[in-house]
Amino acid sequence: MPKYQDLYQDLAKKIREGTIKEDTWLPSEPQLMEQYGTGKDTVRKALSMLAQDGYIQKEHGKGSLVLHVENQPQLLDLAAYPYLPEAPGCETKVHSVRLIQPTGEIARSLGYTARHKVWKVQRTRCIDGEPAVLETDYIDPTIVTDLDMDSARIPAWQHVQDELGLDVGYSRKEITLRPASAREASGLRLQPGQLVVVVRSWTSLEDARRLEYTVAKHHPDKFRYTDFLRKNKKG
Amino acid sequence: MPKYQDLYQDLAKKIREGTIKEDTWLPSEPQLMEQYGTGKDTVRKALSMLAQDGYIQKEHGKGSLVLHVENQPQLLDLAAYPYLPEAPGCETKVHSVRLIQPTGEIARSLGYTARHKVWKVQRTRCIDGEPAVLETDYIDPTIVTDLDMDSARIPAWQHVQDELGLDVGYSRKEITLRPASAREASGLRLQPGQLVVVVRSWTSLEDARRLEYTVAKHHPDKFRYTDFLRKNKKG
DNA sequence: TAGTGGTCTAGACCACGTT
DNA sequence: ACGTGGTCTAGACCACTAC
Image (cartoon, rainbow over all chains, first blue to last red):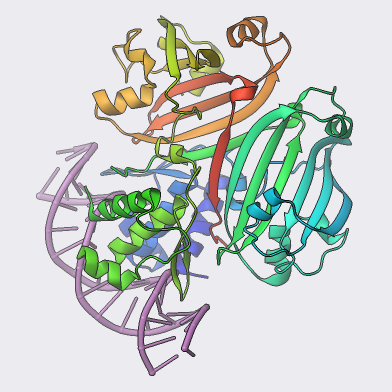
Protein backbone atom coordinates (compact mmCIF):
# COMPACT_ATOMS: atom_id res chain seq x y z
CA MET A 1 0.00 0.00 0.00
CA PRO A 2 1.33 3.43 -0.90
CA LYS A 3 2.35 5.67 1.96
CA TYR A 4 -0.30 8.28 1.22
CA GLN A 5 -3.00 5.64 1.59
CA ASP A 6 -1.59 4.62 4.95
CA LEU A 7 -1.68 8.20 6.05
CA TYR A 8 -5.21 8.68 4.71
CA GLN A 9 -6.44 5.54 6.44
CA ASP A 10 -4.83 6.44 9.70
CA LEU A 11 -6.15 9.98 9.85
CA ALA A 12 -9.60 9.06 8.53
CA LYS A 13 -9.95 6.37 11.18
CA LYS A 14 -8.88 8.70 13.96
CA ILE A 15 -11.36 11.32 12.81
CA ARG A 16 -14.22 8.83 12.52
CA GLU A 17 -13.48 7.40 15.94
CA GLY A 18 -13.05 10.79 17.55
CA THR A 19 -9.40 10.33 18.49
CA ILE A 20 -8.97 13.49 16.49
CA LYS A 21 -11.87 15.72 17.37
CA GLU A 22 -13.94 17.82 15.02
CA ASP A 23 -13.34 21.57 15.01
CA THR A 24 -9.70 21.06 15.87
CA TRP A 25 -6.69 21.53 13.61
CA LEU A 26 -4.67 18.66 12.22
CA PRO A 27 -0.92 18.83 12.73
CA SER A 28 0.67 21.06 10.11
CA GLU A 29 2.10 19.55 6.94
CA PRO A 30 5.72 19.77 8.14
CA GLN A 31 4.68 18.09 11.41
CA LEU A 32 2.93 15.29 9.56
CA MET A 33 5.99 14.87 7.34
CA GLU A 34 8.10 14.28 10.40
CA GLN A 35 5.56 12.13 12.28
CA TYR A 36 5.10 9.81 9.35
CA GLY A 37 8.63 10.10 8.02
CA THR A 38 7.54 11.16 4.57
CA GLY A 39 7.83 13.96 2.04
CA LYS A 40 5.58 16.94 1.54
CA ASP A 41 3.75 15.74 -1.56
CA THR A 42 2.84 12.48 0.13
CA VAL A 43 1.29 14.32 3.04
CA ARG A 44 -0.46 16.68 0.69
CA LYS A 45 -1.93 13.87 -1.36
CA ALA A 46 -3.40 12.23 1.73
CA LEU A 47 -4.82 15.55 2.93
CA SER A 48 -6.36 16.22 -0.48
CA MET A 49 -8.14 12.89 -0.32
CA LEU A 50 -9.41 13.65 3.18
CA ALA A 51 -10.69 17.00 1.95
CA GLN A 52 -12.32 15.40 -1.07
CA ASP A 53 -14.17 12.98 1.17
CA GLY A 54 -15.35 15.65 3.54
CA TYR A 55 -13.15 14.85 6.53
CA ILE A 56 -11.28 18.13 6.61
CA GLN A 57 -11.29 21.62 5.22
CA LYS A 58 -7.91 23.00 4.26
CA GLU A 59 -7.43 26.69 4.95
CA HIS A 60 -4.61 28.61 3.43
CA GLY A 61 -2.30 30.10 6.01
CA LYS A 62 -4.08 28.39 8.88
CA GLY A 63 -4.15 24.63 8.63
CA SER A 64 -6.50 21.71 8.12
CA LEU A 65 -9.73 21.93 10.07
CA VAL A 66 -11.46 18.70 11.04
CA LEU A 67 -15.10 18.68 9.93
CA HIS A 68 -18.17 16.98 11.34
CA VAL A 69 -18.23 13.53 9.73
CA GLU A 70 -21.15 11.90 11.46
CA ASN A 71 -23.85 11.04 8.91
CA GLN A 72 -21.41 11.85 6.17
CA PRO A 73 -21.82 9.57 3.19
CA GLN A 74 -19.58 6.65 3.91
CA LEU A 75 -20.89 5.15 0.72
CA LEU A 76 -18.48 7.24 -1.26
CA ASP A 77 -16.10 4.40 -0.56
CA LEU A 78 -18.46 1.97 -2.20
CA ALA A 79 -18.74 4.36 -5.08
CA ALA A 80 -20.99 2.22 -7.17
CA TYR A 81 -24.09 1.33 -5.29
CA PRO A 82 -27.46 2.93 -4.74
CA TYR A 83 -27.82 4.00 -1.18
CA LEU A 84 -29.21 1.42 1.17
CA PRO A 85 -29.00 1.49 4.94
CA GLU A 86 -26.74 -1.25 6.24
CA ALA A 87 -29.10 -1.79 9.11
CA PRO A 88 -29.11 -5.15 10.87
CA GLY A 89 -32.64 -5.83 9.59
CA CYS A 90 -31.49 -5.67 5.99
CA GLU A 91 -32.09 -8.69 3.81
CA THR A 92 -31.73 -9.59 0.14
CA LYS A 93 -33.76 -12.02 -1.92
CA VAL A 94 -32.62 -13.09 -5.37
CA HIS A 95 -35.53 -14.00 -7.62
CA SER A 96 -33.82 -14.95 -10.84
CA VAL A 97 -30.45 -15.16 -12.54
CA ARG A 98 -30.59 -15.67 -16.28
CA LEU A 99 -28.65 -15.08 -19.47
CA ILE A 100 -30.81 -13.04 -21.80
CA GLN A 101 -30.60 -11.38 -25.18
CA PRO A 102 -30.31 -7.66 -24.35
CA THR A 103 -32.70 -5.06 -25.73
CA GLY A 104 -31.34 -1.95 -27.38
CA GLU A 105 -31.33 0.15 -24.22
CA ILE A 106 -29.53 -2.47 -22.19
CA ALA A 107 -27.01 -3.20 -24.91
CA ARG A 108 -26.27 0.49 -25.23
CA SER A 109 -25.92 0.87 -21.48
CA LEU A 110 -23.31 -1.85 -21.45
CA GLY A 111 -21.60 -0.48 -24.54
CA TYR A 112 -22.42 -3.52 -26.65
CA THR A 113 -22.25 -3.65 -30.35
CA ALA A 114 -21.98 -7.41 -30.74
CA ARG A 115 -24.93 -9.63 -29.95
CA HIS A 116 -23.71 -11.10 -26.70
CA LYS A 117 -26.05 -12.30 -24.07
CA VAL A 118 -26.00 -10.59 -20.68
CA TRP A 119 -26.74 -11.66 -17.14
CA LYS A 120 -30.03 -10.42 -15.80
CA VAL A 121 -30.47 -10.56 -12.03
CA GLN A 122 -33.60 -9.64 -10.14
CA ARG A 123 -33.53 -8.95 -6.43
CA THR A 124 -35.64 -7.53 -3.66
CA ARG A 125 -34.01 -5.77 -0.77
CA CYS A 126 -35.97 -5.65 2.43
CA ILE A 127 -35.63 -3.59 5.58
CA ASP A 128 -37.19 -5.12 8.68
CA GLY A 129 -39.14 -7.50 6.50
CA GLU A 130 -40.61 -4.68 4.39
CA PRO A 131 -39.66 -4.57 0.71
CA ALA A 132 -37.65 -1.42 0.10
CA VAL A 133 -35.93 -1.81 -3.26
CA LEU A 134 -36.55 -3.81 -6.43
CA GLU A 135 -33.35 -4.20 -8.38
CA THR A 136 -32.67 -5.35 -11.88
CA ASP A 137 -29.04 -5.84 -12.68
CA TYR A 138 -27.48 -6.40 -16.10
CA ILE A 139 -23.95 -7.75 -16.04
CA ASP A 140 -21.39 -8.35 -18.75
CA PRO A 141 -20.84 -12.13 -18.84
CA THR A 142 -17.45 -11.77 -20.47
CA ILE A 143 -16.29 -10.26 -17.18
CA VAL A 144 -18.43 -12.23 -14.73
CA THR A 145 -18.56 -15.65 -16.34
CA ASP A 146 -20.14 -17.60 -13.50
CA LEU A 147 -23.13 -16.47 -11.51
CA ASP A 148 -25.71 -18.26 -9.44
CA MET A 149 -28.58 -17.36 -7.12
CA ASP A 150 -26.27 -17.24 -4.16
CA SER A 151 -23.37 -15.23 -5.53
CA ALA A 152 -25.85 -12.80 -7.11
CA ARG A 153 -26.88 -11.63 -3.66
CA ILE A 154 -23.95 -9.26 -3.52
CA PRO A 155 -23.54 -6.53 -6.13
CA ALA A 156 -21.51 -7.45 -9.18
CA TRP A 157 -18.84 -4.87 -8.51
CA GLN A 158 -18.16 -6.40 -5.12
CA HIS A 159 -18.08 -9.86 -6.62
CA VAL A 160 -15.61 -8.70 -9.22
CA GLN A 161 -13.42 -7.13 -6.58
CA ASP A 162 -13.41 -9.95 -4.08
CA GLU A 163 -13.48 -12.96 -6.39
CA LEU A 164 -11.75 -11.82 -9.54
CA GLY A 165 -9.34 -9.27 -8.09
CA LEU A 166 -10.41 -6.63 -10.59
CA ASP A 167 -11.05 -3.04 -9.56
CA VAL A 168 -14.04 -0.83 -10.09
CA GLY A 169 -13.11 2.49 -11.67
CA TYR A 170 -16.11 4.76 -11.73
CA SER A 171 -19.84 4.89 -11.74
CA ARG A 172 -22.46 7.24 -13.10
CA LYS A 173 -25.81 7.48 -11.42
CA GLU A 174 -29.16 9.05 -12.24
CA ILE A 175 -32.14 9.56 -9.95
CA THR A 176 -35.63 10.17 -11.31
CA LEU A 177 -39.22 9.40 -10.31
CA ARG A 178 -42.12 7.78 -12.07
CA PRO A 179 -45.42 6.06 -11.23
CA ALA A 180 -45.12 2.45 -10.17
CA SER A 181 -46.26 -0.25 -12.55
CA ALA A 182 -48.74 -2.79 -11.21
CA ARG A 183 -45.89 -5.22 -10.73
CA GLU A 184 -43.72 -2.71 -8.89
CA ALA A 185 -46.62 -1.56 -6.75
CA SER A 186 -47.30 -5.08 -5.56
CA GLY A 187 -43.61 -5.82 -5.06
CA LEU A 188 -43.12 -2.74 -2.91
CA ARG A 189 -46.58 -2.84 -1.34
CA LEU A 190 -47.63 0.49 -2.79
CA GLN A 191 -50.85 1.77 -4.26
CA PRO A 192 -50.73 1.44 -8.05
CA GLY A 193 -49.82 4.79 -9.54
CA GLN A 194 -47.81 5.83 -6.47
CA LEU A 195 -44.37 7.14 -7.26
CA VAL A 196 -41.20 5.09 -7.06
CA VAL A 197 -37.67 6.44 -7.08
CA VAL A 198 -35.70 5.07 -10.00
CA VAL A 199 -31.94 4.96 -9.55
CA ARG A 200 -30.05 3.92 -12.66
CA SER A 201 -26.36 3.31 -12.42
CA TRP A 202 -23.65 2.46 -14.88
CA THR A 203 -20.50 0.99 -13.42
CA SER A 204 -17.17 0.50 -15.18
CA LEU A 205 -13.92 -1.18 -14.29
CA GLU A 206 -10.57 0.55 -13.98
CA ASP A 207 -9.78 -0.33 -17.56
CA ALA A 208 -13.05 1.35 -18.63
CA ARG A 209 -14.80 -1.91 -19.54
CA ARG A 210 -18.47 -1.55 -18.63
CA LEU A 211 -19.36 -4.04 -15.96
CA GLU A 212 -22.95 -3.53 -14.98
CA TYR A 213 -26.08 -1.50 -15.50
CA THR A 214 -28.52 -1.40 -12.63
CA VAL A 215 -32.07 -0.14 -12.38
CA ALA A 216 -33.26 0.08 -8.81
CA LYS A 217 -36.80 1.03 -7.87
CA HIS A 218 -36.92 2.37 -4.33
CA HIS A 219 -39.89 2.65 -2.06
CA PRO A 220 -40.33 6.41 -1.64
CA ASP A 221 -40.66 6.27 2.15
CA LYS A 222 -37.41 4.37 2.51
CA PHE A 223 -35.32 6.34 0.10
CA ARG A 224 -32.53 8.62 1.23
CA TYR A 225 -29.51 9.83 -0.66
CA THR A 226 -26.68 11.99 0.55
CA ASP A 227 -23.85 13.63 -1.26
CA PHE A 228 -20.77 15.61 -0.43
CA LEU A 229 -19.54 18.02 -3.06
CA ARG A 230 -16.46 20.13 -3.07
CA LYS A 231 -16.11 23.24 -5.12
CA ASN A 232 -12.93 23.13 -7.10
CA LYS A 233 -11.66 26.36 -8.49
CA LYS A 234 -11.46 25.66 -12.18
CA GLY A 235 -11.66 29.17 -13.52
CA MET B 1 -4.63 31.16 -12.66
CA PRO B 2 -2.37 28.20 -11.86
CA LYS B 3 -0.96 26.29 -14.80
CA TYR B 4 -2.77 23.08 -13.91
CA GLN B 5 -6.09 24.90 -14.07
CA ASP B 6 -5.22 26.22 -17.51
CA LEU B 7 -4.43 22.73 -18.62
CA TYR B 8 -7.60 21.33 -17.07
CA GLN B 9 -9.73 24.03 -18.70
CA ASP B 10 -8.16 23.56 -22.06
CA LEU B 11 -8.51 19.79 -22.15
CA ALA B 12 -12.00 19.78 -20.61
CA LYS B 13 -13.20 22.26 -23.20
CA LYS B 14 -11.74 20.27 -26.07
CA ILE B 15 -13.35 17.10 -24.79
CA ARG B 16 -16.75 18.74 -24.30
CA GLU B 17 -16.64 20.29 -27.74
CA GLY B 18 -15.42 17.13 -29.40
CA THR B 19 -12.09 18.53 -30.57
CA ILE B 20 -10.71 15.62 -28.61
CA LYS B 21 -13.00 12.69 -29.35
CA GLU B 22 -14.25 10.14 -26.88
CA ASP B 23 -12.70 6.70 -26.95
CA THR B 24 -9.36 8.13 -28.02
CA TRP B 25 -6.22 8.49 -25.94
CA LEU B 26 -4.93 11.79 -24.67
CA PRO B 27 -1.32 12.65 -25.43
CA SER B 28 0.98 10.96 -22.94
CA GLU B 29 2.16 12.80 -19.87
CA PRO B 30 5.63 13.54 -21.29
CA GLN B 31 3.99 14.86 -24.47
CA LEU B 32 1.66 17.10 -22.48
CA MET B 33 4.62 18.34 -20.45
CA GLU B 34 6.29 19.47 -23.64
CA GLN B 35 3.16 20.84 -25.33
CA TYR B 36 2.28 22.98 -22.37
CA GLY B 37 5.84 23.66 -21.25
CA THR B 38 5.30 22.36 -17.76
CA GLY B 39 6.48 19.77 -15.26
CA LYS B 40 5.16 16.29 -14.66
CA ASP B 41 3.27 16.99 -11.44
CA THR B 42 1.42 19.87 -13.04
CA VAL B 43 0.24 17.66 -15.87
CA ARG B 44 -0.68 14.92 -13.42
CA LYS B 45 -2.70 17.27 -11.27
CA ALA B 46 -4.75 18.43 -14.25
CA LEU B 47 -5.30 14.84 -15.38
CA SER B 48 -6.40 13.82 -11.87
CA MET B 49 -9.00 16.55 -11.90
CA LEU B 50 -10.25 15.45 -15.32
CA ALA B 51 -10.51 11.89 -14.03
CA GLN B 52 -12.31 13.06 -10.90
CA ASP B 53 -14.86 14.87 -13.00
CA GLY B 54 -15.46 11.97 -15.33
CA TYR B 55 -13.75 13.30 -18.44
CA ILE B 56 -11.08 10.61 -18.66
CA GLN B 57 -10.07 7.25 -17.29
CA LYS B 58 -6.39 6.81 -16.57
CA GLU B 59 -5.01 3.39 -17.32
CA HIS B 60 -1.67 2.30 -16.03
CA GLY B 61 0.77 1.46 -18.78
CA LYS B 62 -1.58 2.61 -21.50
CA GLY B 63 -2.61 6.23 -21.18
CA SER B 64 -5.62 8.42 -20.49
CA LEU B 65 -8.81 7.34 -22.24
CA VAL B 66 -11.39 9.99 -23.07
CA LEU B 67 -14.84 9.06 -21.74
CA HIS B 68 -18.30 9.90 -22.93
CA VAL B 69 -19.16 13.21 -21.29
CA GLU B 70 -22.51 14.06 -22.81
CA ASN B 71 -25.15 14.33 -20.11
CA GLN B 72 -22.43 14.17 -17.53
CA PRO B 73 -23.21 16.29 -14.49
CA GLN B 74 -21.83 19.69 -15.34
CA LEU B 75 -23.30 20.83 -12.08
CA LEU B 76 -20.31 19.48 -10.23
CA ASP B 77 -18.80 22.83 -11.06
CA LEU B 78 -21.64 24.57 -9.30
CA ALA B 79 -21.12 22.26 -6.40
CA ALA B 80 -23.69 23.73 -4.17
CA TYR B 81 -27.01 23.81 -5.89
CA PRO B 82 -29.91 21.45 -6.27
CA TYR B 83 -30.13 20.27 -9.82
CA LEU B 84 -32.19 22.40 -12.11
CA PRO B 85 -32.11 22.36 -15.90
CA GLU B 86 -30.68 25.59 -17.28
CA ALA B 87 -33.24 25.48 -20.05
CA PRO B 88 -34.18 28.72 -21.79
CA GLY B 89 -37.69 28.50 -20.34
CA CYS B 90 -36.38 28.67 -16.79
CA GLU B 91 -37.64 31.46 -14.56
CA THR B 92 -37.33 32.44 -10.91
CA LYS B 93 -39.80 34.32 -8.75
CA VAL B 94 -38.79 35.65 -5.35
CA HIS B 95 -41.72 35.81 -2.97
CA SER B 96 -40.15 37.18 0.16
CA VAL B 97 -36.86 38.23 1.72
CA ARG B 98 -36.93 38.71 5.45
CA LEU B 99 -34.75 38.65 8.53
CA ILE B 100 -36.22 36.14 10.96
CA GLN B 101 -35.44 34.62 14.33
CA PRO B 102 -34.26 31.09 13.47
CA THR B 103 -35.86 28.00 14.94
CA GLY B 104 -33.70 25.33 16.51
CA GLU B 105 -33.31 23.28 13.34
CA ILE B 106 -32.34 26.25 11.24
CA ALA B 107 -29.95 27.61 13.84
CA ARG B 108 -28.29 24.21 14.09
CA SER B 109 -28.05 23.90 10.34
CA LEU B 110 -26.19 27.18 10.17
CA GLY B 111 -24.05 26.33 13.18
CA TYR B 112 -25.50 29.04 15.34
CA THR B 113 -25.19 29.23 19.04
CA ALA B 114 -25.85 32.94 19.42
CA ARG B 115 -29.29 34.33 18.77
CA HIS B 116 -28.63 36.07 15.51
CA LYS B 117 -31.33 36.64 12.99
CA VAL B 118 -31.01 34.98 9.59
CA TRP B 119 -32.18 35.81 6.11
CA LYS B 120 -35.13 33.77 4.92
CA VAL B 121 -35.76 33.78 1.19
CA GLN B 122 -38.67 32.10 -0.57
CA ARG B 123 -38.60 31.43 -4.28
CA THR B 124 -40.43 29.51 -6.94
CA ARG B 125 -38.53 28.19 -9.92
CA CYS B 126 -40.56 27.56 -13.04
CA ILE B 127 -39.86 25.64 -16.20
CA ASP B 128 -41.88 26.71 -19.23
CA GLY B 129 -44.26 28.53 -16.95
CA GLU B 130 -44.88 25.46 -14.80
CA PRO B 131 -43.77 25.61 -11.16
CA ALA B 132 -41.01 23.06 -10.63
CA VAL B 133 -39.29 23.89 -7.36
CA LEU B 134 -40.23 25.70 -4.16
CA GLU B 135 -37.15 26.88 -2.34
CA THR B 136 -36.60 28.18 1.11
CA ASP B 137 -33.17 29.55 1.73
CA TYR B 138 -31.62 30.51 5.07
CA ILE B 139 -28.55 32.69 4.85
CA ASP B 140 -26.10 33.92 7.43
CA PRO B 141 -26.50 37.71 7.51
CA THR B 142 -23.05 38.23 8.97
CA ILE B 143 -21.72 37.02 5.61
CA VAL B 144 -24.40 38.39 3.29
CA THR B 145 -25.29 41.68 4.93
CA ASP B 146 -27.45 43.17 2.18
CA LEU B 147 -30.15 41.31 0.34
CA ASP B 148 -33.20 42.41 -1.62
CA MET B 149 -35.85 40.79 -3.77
CA ASP B 150 -33.74 41.24 -6.85
CA SER B 151 -30.37 40.01 -5.62
CA ALA B 152 -32.09 37.06 -3.95
CA ARG B 153 -32.98 35.64 -7.36
CA ILE B 154 -29.55 34.07 -7.65
CA PRO B 155 -28.36 31.55 -5.07
CA ALA B 156 -26.48 32.96 -2.12
CA TRP B 157 -23.28 31.12 -2.95
CA GLN B 158 -23.19 32.76 -6.36
CA HIS B 159 -23.89 36.14 -4.84
CA VAL B 160 -21.09 35.63 -2.37
CA GLN B 161 -18.71 34.64 -5.13
CA ASP B 162 -19.51 37.36 -7.61
CA GLU B 163 -20.23 40.27 -5.29
CA LEU B 164 -18.12 39.62 -2.24
CA GLY B 165 -15.23 37.75 -3.81
CA LEU B 166 -15.48 34.93 -1.29
CA ASP B 167 -15.27 31.30 -2.31
CA VAL B 168 -17.57 28.40 -1.63
CA GLY B 169 -15.77 25.45 -0.12
CA TYR B 170 -18.07 22.50 0.10
CA SER B 171 -21.65 21.43 0.30
CA ARG B 172 -23.54 18.51 1.76
CA LYS B 173 -26.80 17.44 0.25
CA GLU B 174 -29.61 15.11 1.22
CA ILE B 175 -32.46 13.86 -0.93
CA THR B 176 -35.63 12.42 0.59
CA LEU B 177 -39.34 12.27 -0.23
CA ARG B 178 -42.47 13.14 1.67
CA PRO B 179 -46.12 13.98 0.99
CA ALA B 180 -46.77 17.54 -0.06
CA SER B 181 -48.46 19.86 2.39
CA ALA B 182 -51.54 21.71 1.18
CA ARG B 183 -49.42 24.77 0.58
CA GLU B 184 -46.78 22.86 -1.37
CA ALA B 185 -49.40 21.03 -3.39
CA SER B 186 -50.98 24.25 -4.53
CA GLY B 187 -47.62 25.89 -5.18
CA LEU B 188 -46.49 23.00 -7.37
CA ARG B 189 -49.94 22.23 -8.77
CA LEU B 190 -50.06 18.76 -7.29
CA GLN B 191 -52.79 16.73 -5.68
CA PRO B 192 -52.56 17.10 -1.89
CA GLY B 193 -50.78 14.08 -0.48
CA GLN B 194 -48.73 13.56 -3.63
CA LEU B 195 -45.03 13.15 -3.00
CA VAL B 196 -42.50 15.92 -3.35
CA VAL B 197 -38.74 15.50 -3.50
CA VAL B 198 -37.02 17.33 -0.68
CA VAL B 199 -33.44 18.37 -1.29
CA ARG B 200 -31.72 19.85 1.72
CA SER B 201 -28.30 21.35 1.30
CA TRP B 202 -25.78 22.87 3.62
CA THR B 203 -23.18 25.08 2.02
CA SER B 204 -20.00 26.38 3.61
CA LEU B 205 -17.32 28.82 2.55
CA GLU B 206 -13.68 27.98 2.05
CA ASP B 207 -12.93 29.05 5.59
CA ALA B 208 -15.62 26.62 6.82
CA ARG B 209 -18.08 29.33 7.85
CA ARG B 210 -21.58 28.07 7.14
CA LEU B 211 -23.20 30.23 4.53
CA GLU B 212 -26.60 28.85 3.72
CA TYR B 213 -29.09 26.12 4.39
CA THR B 214 -31.58 25.40 1.64
CA VAL B 215 -34.70 23.31 1.56
CA ALA B 216 -35.98 22.76 -1.95
CA LYS B 217 -39.21 20.96 -2.75
CA HIS B 218 -39.15 19.60 -6.26
CA HIS B 219 -42.06 18.58 -8.40
CA PRO B 220 -41.57 14.81 -8.83
CA ASP B 221 -42.09 14.84 -12.58
CA LYS B 222 -39.45 17.48 -13.11
CA PHE B 223 -36.82 16.12 -10.79
CA ARG B 224 -33.61 14.60 -12.08
CA TYR B 225 -30.30 14.20 -10.32
CA THR B 226 -27.09 12.79 -11.67
CA ASP B 227 -23.85 11.91 -10.01
CA PHE B 228 -20.43 10.74 -11.01
CA LEU B 229 -18.49 8.75 -8.47
CA ARG B 230 -14.97 7.48 -8.64
CA LYS B 231 -13.72 4.56 -6.65
CA ASN B 232 -10.56 5.50 -4.84
CA LYS B 233 -8.42 2.73 -3.58
CA LYS B 234 -8.13 3.47 0.07
CA GLY B 235 -7.28 0.09 1.40
C1' DT C 1 12.86 -3.20 -24.54
C1' DA C 2 10.43 0.93 -24.72
C1' DG C 3 6.66 3.65 -23.41
C1' DT C 4 3.16 4.51 -20.23
C1' DG C 5 1.29 6.02 -15.75
C1' DG C 6 2.20 5.81 -10.27
C1' DT C 7 4.89 6.91 -6.12
C1' DC C 8 8.11 9.57 -3.60
C1' DT C 9 11.57 13.00 -2.47
C1' DA C 10 14.06 17.55 -2.00
C1' DG C 11 13.80 22.04 -2.63
C1' DA C 12 12.49 26.65 -4.54
C1' DC C 13 9.20 30.05 -4.47
C1' DC C 14 4.54 32.16 -3.71
C1' DA C 15 0.25 33.59 -1.07
C1' DC C 16 -2.30 33.88 3.04
C1' DG C 17 -3.05 34.70 8.10
C1' DT C 18 -1.30 35.79 12.50
C1' DT C 19 1.76 38.06 15.72
C1' DA D 1 8.78 37.97 10.74
C1' DC D 2 7.05 33.55 10.93
C1' DG D 3 4.30 29.54 10.14
C1' DT D 4 0.85 27.87 7.33
C1' DG D 5 -0.82 25.80 2.97
C1' DG D 6 -0.35 26.21 -2.58
C1' DT D 7 2.27 25.81 -6.88
C1' DC D 8 5.92 24.07 -9.63
C1' DT D 9 10.12 21.69 -11.01
C1' DA D 10 13.66 17.97 -11.68
C1' DG D 11 14.69 13.61 -11.04
C1' DA D 12 14.79 8.83 -9.15
C1' DC D 13 12.57 4.65 -9.08
C1' DC D 14 8.60 1.33 -9.57
C1' DA D 15 4.74 -1.15 -12.04
C1' DC D 16 2.02 -2.10 -15.86
C1' DT D 17 1.24 -2.81 -21.03
C1' DA D 18 2.71 -3.33 -25.15
C1' DC D 19 5.64 -5.41 -28.95
